[in-house]
Length: 305
Image 1 (cartoon, one colour):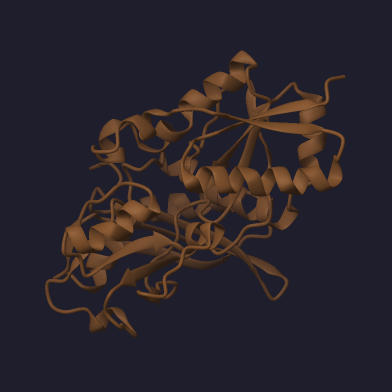
Image 2 (image 1 turned 30 degrees about the vertical axis):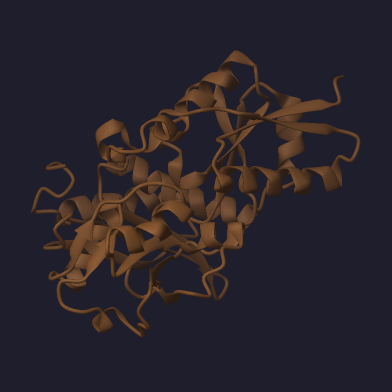
């Protein structure tokens, strides 16, 4: 049996930091195994200009990595779960979900803000997410949404180069990269924007028939995180979700119970449909909430995208 394991990862700072976190966890349990990172360039990395919706949605950050898994050139891959499509290639599986960190978004600004109401009229906010855009505009329809892409450093620079009043980022990425935000003000958006499905959680993908790797990954799987994100992914799958759809979904534990919040929103913020605090201790809740939202969608939010 070989003592080397090849781990697939994108080359971005965040992807590498996340992959190194996973490897560090495994090295504590399997000190005799050598983990080697193989960088894979994805379509999302090659095309940094067009919107994700235009170039293919979530799958643009994982397809080439999944091809390497299927070809056997890597043993497993570390993804941000929110980048992973709801339906995987038949021969692949998500082998572990390490403990989730914050699933929420935040607004990073040069201005000292205590709420969204503190933003000036017509403020320019940078985000490439229809989910974030729709929810923001439902609260502040006067805001100007400026599409931006790039890594966290690039997007922070665009606050200055594109005269933005703020940008929206996932708290998880800022935490994992230990980004210095001392020259900015950060507004927690937990009470304003429902998270993306899987946000804040890593997913480790491997071959379904690779029992050695799957047993290894079992050791770092967090059962509560896995249970919650599977509810979210069932919800997204039922809606046919990708970056082309403004969907939010969050399952979480509270007072010994699992609850689930689901949302669909029109990109212009005119219509936001929610189902919140749905008990989710039994199976099928993701599908149930998706069906409830679709039944309430008289505006063609999903069909019209």
